[in-house]
Amino acid sequence: MVSNDAVSHDGTPAALRDDFLLAGRTGFLFHRAALLLAEDVERALLTAGMRTRYFFVLASLAGGPTLSQQDLSRLLNLDPTTVVTVIDEMEHNGHVERRRSAADRRRYELFLTDDGRETLAKAEQIAFDAESAYFSGLGDDERTALVATLRRVLEGRWPASVCTT
Amino acid sequence: MVSNDAVSHDGTPAALRDDFLLAGRTGFLFHRAALLLAEDVERALLTAGMRTRYFFVLASLAGGPTLSQQDLSRLLNLDPTTVVTVIDEMEHNGHVERRRSAADRRRYELFLTDDGRETLAKAEQIAFDAESAYFSGLGDDERTALVATLRRVLEGRWPASVCTT
DNA sequence: TATTGTTATACTCTATAACTATA
DNA sequence: TATAGTTATAGAGTATAACAATA
Image (cartoon, rainbow over all chains, first blue to last red; front, top):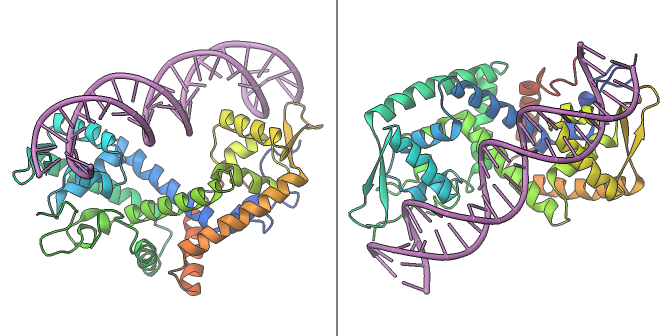
């Protein structure tokens, strides 16, 4: 019986053979590795009934300057209409409050509630654990180097339209 | 006039402040960096009328063992129904041929045509250029280290259901 | 009984356009 | 005239279920 796996006749997995083009593409490896991590984190957060995007918004509102929905949209690359949906849900859950900006009455200023902060803390723990497991194959030095590399690649590109200074 | 950017009062971009939680998450940086690269490559390929997925399939079929649609599905994490659509399109474009497997008449063996190989070569050049621009901020050593790190992280996880040996 | 490929269908997610209120 | 937020709608993308042919 011929194997139906993508394995060549000498038993070498296709992905590791030099003639498998994608395996040699930095971009493809990057793409795949990030997708696996995103899936791991999403799966972990789902056990607590939370989605990754929800977590990202919670974390964005937790510190630093006060953000509006448009700020969030630019910061997290979310469509403004998507932000409305997420904030609606978060407000309904009692995690976020909309307050009209006194300086510009078109805008809402978004604030985490105490419940929102508690929920964020739980989600952070879950995400932290998932990431730790994901990166468990790396040494501390290697992970530190990875973070430095990622920061350098992102330099000047994120947050894209937010960080204009 | 108060700035509507996510910039704090001292002018430090929110993303770079210590109190902006997401900026400290390896997973978030990873997620964002990979998304930007994927967008760059997609945008570049679109100038030649090609999508990233199409390119991935071309590259998967270019070398190594002969693949069936199910193999592709597992290798690239594509739904089998999605593979049907992509291969239909590729066959229509004259880039791929379906040939019934003699050993298992349920399966198709997928082969690139000469046209498919030419198209792949062009797409590879485009993707290569886009990746080079994306990684231009990194030194050779840093990029080599990144690839090594990515490979280690992917070890045993990709290709997931394909590489079972 | 399980698997490959296929179609039809439903569902989710995102993007588009139009509207209001404010600037 | 432009921007923040909102709604309704359309579109793309994906997943689900059922089917025929083959193992």
